[in-house]
Structures are given as C-alpha cells and as structure tokens.
Length: 211
Image (tube, rainbow, N blue to C red; front, side, top):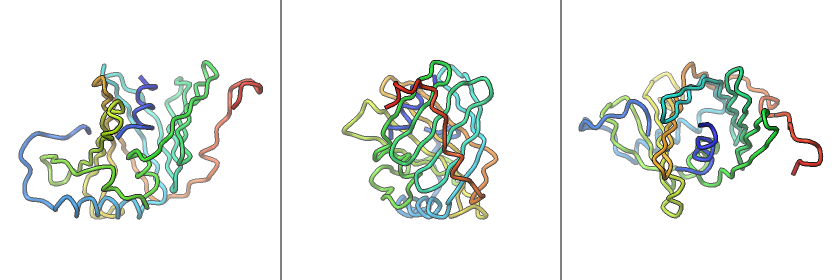
C-alpha cells in the first residue's frame, strides 16, 4: 500500500474525499482560485498535521506530517509501521527499517513540488475542478507526457482565519492502474516553530551499501 502511494506522491500529478458531482453554484473564476491557492502556499512557511492514509482496499494508516518550506516534508507513520518518508525539495526518500532499504524518487515538477515551493507557477501543473461545494477547492493535475503517473487532486477548504483564507485538507492519488490512495489531514497548525532536525533520518543500510 505505501510504496504505490509514495510513487504517486513523488511523481504524479492527484481526487479528494468530499467531492461531489452536483452542479456547483456561481463561484470565483479558476484563475482567481489558483491565485488564492498560490497566496495560501506563499503565506505558509511551516505546517504540522495528523494524517490518515487510506488505500483502495479501505485500509488506513495514521501518522504525523511535518512541512517546512522551501522543500522539506516528513511523513512519520504510526508506531509499528517501520517506514519513514522524508522530502528535501528535490526527491522523496523512503526508508524501510524492516528490510533496511532506502529508495528515492524525484519530485521534479509534480504538484507536490508546488506545495513545497510556492514560487512555482501553479497554473503549469494543475487546474481548478468543480467540487459542488463553495467551501471546497479542488486542484487537479496530470502530466500528459507521463500518463503512467496517473492523476492527483489536492483539496482545500475556505477558512477566513487561515493563511490566504484556505486550509490544506489532503489529496488523493490515482495511478494508471486506477489504484487510489487518499491522504486526509487534521489538526493543522501553520507557521509554528519546526526544527531542521525534523527532516533528518537514520540510514539503516550497512555502511558499504549506501549510495
């Protein structure tokens, strides 16, 4: 479950829980909405949140998300799950402590890189899609040159007291085989103190195997 999620997260463009097919009411123009999303991203220097990751079979894992811009993110799973995902802005590194394996995926120009580097042009990677709820903003991306990466949809809810008037609620990745993995966030805290040490990790590989 976790490896397909990481692959999609690292390279894919993402559908979020809560979207509906109802005809949406009159709302802001897509360009205005993308501008608001960009304003939110630029206003958030750090964020911490609890996350729940659910796969296509309905299995859920919980953990803690820590983000610090530019470029750093950490997914720490619940006790008993021997995996850690850390991003440095250029790549996501997955550390599997059970088998002592380290894997890296380039972030490149995926939507995740936009989340981590708000100076990027959001319109190059994503578009606004109808949600059926004026309080829910959905941003969907796809790389037409690499359809094997599937799609990704990022969800925000409108909140006047939040940075840029939005709160990041989560995202869903759908790969080319239609496998779905959803991340839902809760207990978000913005612009709190986050130490750079939060993005360090212990390498479990034997000394000669590191590369």
